[in-house]
Length: 293
Image (cartoon, rainbow, N blue to C red; front, side, top):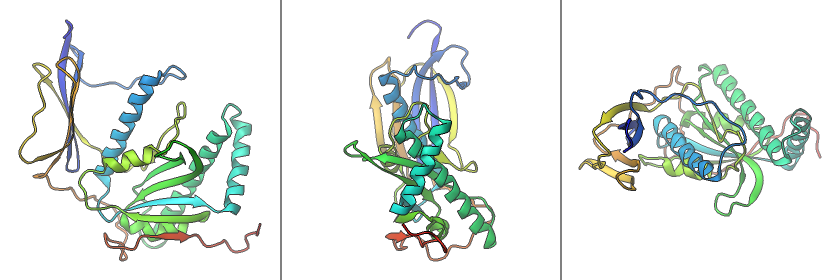
């Protein structure tokens, strides 16, 4: 270790998932500050690291805020709605001439996703709940396995009570519904979602609600780059030890830790949308008075 440097242990708890990371930092470092964003200066190696870090951050969000029986929806556009989306993308090109057609389509899809969220919130409020809604929204336009381009679509994570409202609120085409399974670490879902997101300079990979629970983070100084031990009550999900001079990483499920309940203020009644709820594909009804192509 270089002179003037020290090792620190960062511990993050997201539900039952515990992550431990050792990092080497300058002496006097207490809290990691936010760096200013720079455009156009990211190397390919740094982009790969950013991809991995984005997956970890999204996994923490999901582990803190979603449970078995909550839903993963995939929303797509009908041919008629796709024409309207393409027109919106063309108009965005007038304001953002530096963006390619693919980026404009993703931006237009993200805007439609925001409208979708607002319709769900209004519907919930109209039925006696509050407008608060926990969600993760991802605009995808590539095949996660092959890397080939695909027509843009939206992935969204919602609590179980929002399933029916979300299906009714999507007016652009079809909605595929899948329930989250009984598992303690949803990192595979985060990886699945972000593998379908094309790299865009300075583009956000996903959006979340502002009222989401966050991981519990603790930081402490350690005498050196100590090996990260696995306890008897922990199930290892990922363990990386690259050497004494390299950061170490450990992600486990702590079986002694109870899964915290997600507190939903102004809880909306759950209408038979639990872990055994039906999953399938739903087609959005046509708007009254809508023009036919």
